Length: 356
Image 1 (cartoon, rainbow, N blue to C red):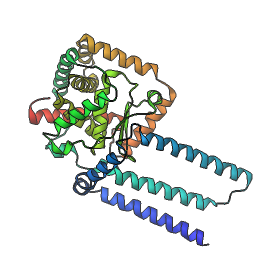
Image 2 (cartoon, rainbow, N blue to C red; image 1 turned 90 degrees about the vertical axis):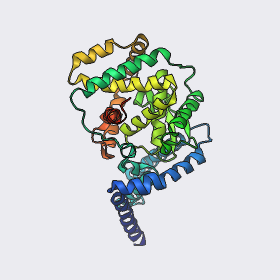
Image 3 (cartoon, rainbow, N blue to C red; image 1 turned 120 degrees about the vertical axis):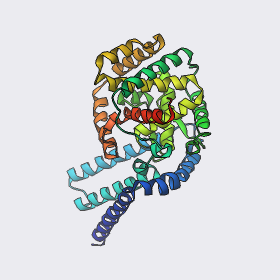
Image 4 (cartoon, rainbow, N blue to C red; image 1 turned 60 degrees about the horizontal axis):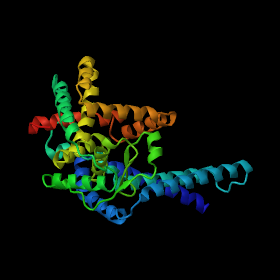
């Protein structure tokens, strides 16, 4: 009887705590002031200090251990029920699930997830982000094409894998922080993913672990794209949870870096976003833009397409569906297309500062 009462109390406490987190997240100004620029930077520094010194991703090992434990528990519960030797009632199992799910949800939000509900980089820079006006997308695509071609001839790739990639990414954020102090990136917690090959099949180039504060980069993707992935994941560490905002913060770091490889990777990525959007309204112009790419950029585009085809598989598509749902649940109604909407931030930035 005591066990039943305890289970009920635990469920009520879990639901009450989740409701409290959701209530706090409903006011973007409150989140921005008290969490994103208040508590979160201190938590982020703590986690990066705690685990940043490790040469491997602790979060990757934790994910593997958690998955193994869950599989073991489900298998054990299934076998016990099948044999008729289960000691727990259905209610006890459900209450445990709710309790564990609530703990994960609360920890996720307090450790990082509330950043989905903040005002973000547009408010910090005073940008008016709105739908692109006629002609703006065409002009932006042209300018990004020119930038991509310019830096494609002068980029200094060298060895873009760890630790060189890390040091150059850190240097990029060091320069942008001189203009925007809220983009200061110290201490560092930047790792290679332990599951790079698996990541190719699952369709990810990098990811941020909100439970450990580590940024992971898949160093098995095409080399020329690594710099932008690195800047994007570091932006997540700095509290920019939405994918379009992390893209834009990465752009600010690349633009300030003076590093041609980082600027090329970023401008080329943004050109592909803008040209893809342009294709929906003017496919002829979009095709002309692709034909106007420099020879090095054309080779990189061919490598990117070949890489995508090489690792295409049913698992990738399934993960895309789940990831799209995850983004929509976290204040990104465009789902995976959110990455592409960074061009609206870039248009707003150009309107205010007269440059890209």
